Amino acid sequence: MSRMVGTVSRGVRAPIIRQGDNIVDIVTESVLAAAEAEGYGIRDRDIVAMTEAIVARAQGNYASVDDIAADVYDRFGGETVGVIHPILSRNRFAICLRGIAKGAKKIVLMLSYPSDEVGNHLISLDELDEKGIDPYRDVLSLERYRELFGYGKHRFTGVDYVEYYESLIREAGAEAEIIFANDPRAILPYTARVLNCDIHTRRRTKRLLLKAGAEIVCGLDEILSSPKGGSGYNEHYGLLGSNKATEDTVKLFPRDCQPVVDAIQAKIKAATGKTVEVMVYGDGAFKDPVGKIWELADPVVSPAYTKGLEGTPNELKLKYLADNEFAELSGEELKDAIKAKIHEKDGSLVGNMASEGTTPRQLTDLIGSLCDLTSGSGDKGTPIIHIQGYFDNYTTE
Image (cartoon, rainbow, N blue to C red):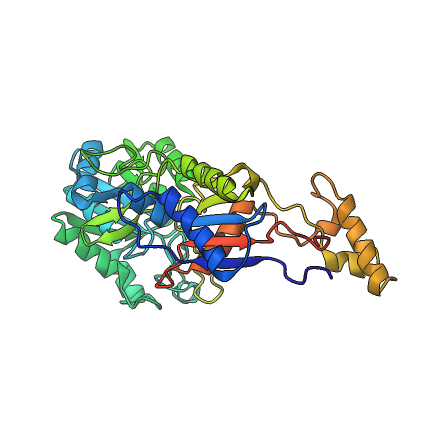
């Protein structure tokens, strides 16, 4: 009988990870123990994935408000800094903002509107239309913003982020001025020293600011890109991908992850004889259709993965084949024809109508999204994901 089950994604429970723990041993042992306890075997081309959080925790990759402040002070001289295009998040940015403000005399905070980069809304597009405001051209002062839109709160968190961020800056000892604009160059009449906090558009932002005459442009990816004293750091992403750990510290995105995934692959191979693929994942790359929030607040979905996860899917659309090329067939004859077509495919299917509608995304982005949805972000206690059958197709027995 043909296999009746395709892809299976399992959350695997693990101990609470602490600094200094051997993450390679913990992940390997947890996966093997789960398979034994639940009565399933490890197969070639299974995928084992772990959240970036447990890797960073094991590394002890943390930084304090004071560490952030020291780096900001060194880069900007302790004077006025334009902080532009941050996301609206108590978890992702609030502690970073406290450190930034502590390292400066004044912060000119420029917020994107109607939403931040990942879709957290200050106001709605309908409100902009009603007031006749063009978000691509209009620069609003705080007073003008309040006059137009009042004191709205985030629909999920109940927080007025404008008020919240202003209070964080002042409590850190800096002066605060807030404006609203989407063109990064709008900050330059206020200050020529700019910290751009956008994630996926950061390179364009830096280019536009430098071309427009900014004196200093530093991205959030450059703050703590090297250690400050004994702090954690991330040489590629700095504070991007960081999360609140305590009221005074953040956990940074993990570093040096490639040796981790390679070592886990080798240990599982030694224990089972099977070659699995391994990856570290953070946020999934998907968008909430109700709240309009794009989940990807990390700089990448996966900072490290084994070689078998490179590339994009190479799949045929079964319903296209059934409705077009094999429309006259049915039953076993149709099944056999489709299987033969799958066996015949080779190389890239780009431009082939039979692949139209399949997902043209990186494997690690797709798998990372599956992992993020499986593990959740709360109290499931499954920071390790074991996926089976992901690379199977209709012909797999």
